[in-house]
Length: 178
Image (cartoon, rainbow, N blue to C red; front, side):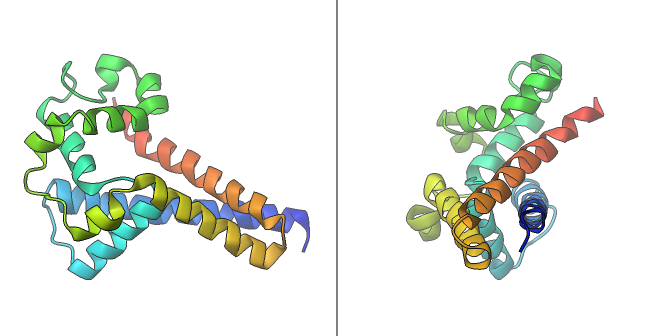
């Protein structure tokens, strides 16, 4: 197959992975866990947790805690990622690091996610973010290698890069509303 087809396939897969991760974030993390606006069937919840583990490495209780803290103190100095306080571009470009820092401070999760305790799957798998991300990238690389040969590894990394840039850009784009 031609290189152009391979590159287009990698970009396409990266976009699809981004959309799947955005769906899991919106439905499961945001509406289901954080705001309790809907009840997600346990099987779908597990699929969403696995998807987020492989595509983002996010821990649901940390995401919920940081987002709840954001709502509790929107656009004040206590807001963990306020574009009003910190500037749009700082939030847009460093939002993942801001989430990670606040989620790991210890107090935020204790205060804002008491109702999202870790379970055995968290302790065994989902709390190991780097492992999930590594497996996710490995799946992409192996899949592309099976189709395109040894240089499919590069295509897998391209798909993962398209996903990372797309996911981080889309999740921070909500800040355009100000």
